[in-house]
Image 1 (cartoon, rainbow, N blue to C red):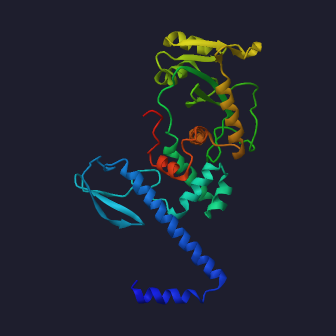
Image 2: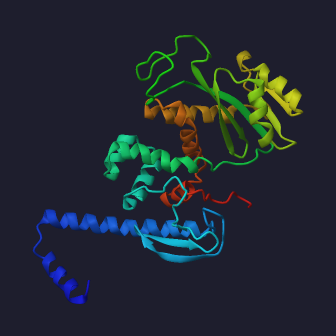
Image 3: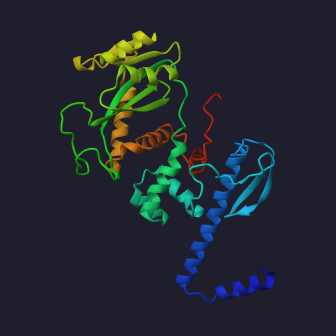
Length: 322
């Protein structure tokens, strides 16, 4: 648009009705947020240089498309933008992303986020799990010192599935068997005294010794002390794995024995149940996404829309001391 056309457009704005002015203002706000999102995406891409197709590092700019800078790899000749081969590829309405990410930080439901962002509820649901698909991978690699471990159990849910393996339940239904059974999904949570937390969805029914061997040894320091309740499976696992272990007998009313307790991990269980209850049941298939979502909120590592957007692209904040 040349200068004369631009001045003519400005003069026409004076004749718009209040309703039309609101539409123009909303459009300008959306364009401004789209530009802000594009800048954040470009800044995040610069932290992970390389071609997503061949990992080549010799690139050059190759025009723009859909508001994003495109690049061409001199090694393989393929073009890409900052979102190529990420869960956010091909998502539209970039001007609404930061608003939606704030809804995630506020733990809003699908419908609440859809209303606040101005998108359809199906889009809101799809965005939730696209943004969380990689963000949930922001987790510590090791637990240090005293590490508490305990399980939380949630009723298995095939919400949204087109082919159920069992008779359908009403939302918020109950198990047909008392106690822990195959109708429940086990979430193993390990947490050290610095607040670093790891979670594992081990599957249906009580946690087994084999599952503990799979989950815990790779993440525990060699000199770590594992503290659990009196569940015998931890005793046998620790003996086989050569891990120092202490148990606290909660059933006998003993909750603390000096520094030996599982208060931290049990408090995290309580926060998990209280937080996830607002969604009125989540599909077991998506449970790792919700666990990663809460972990990011609980540690306050993903505390702004910008950091959450970076995490959704696989770029995480540095851990303290790194």
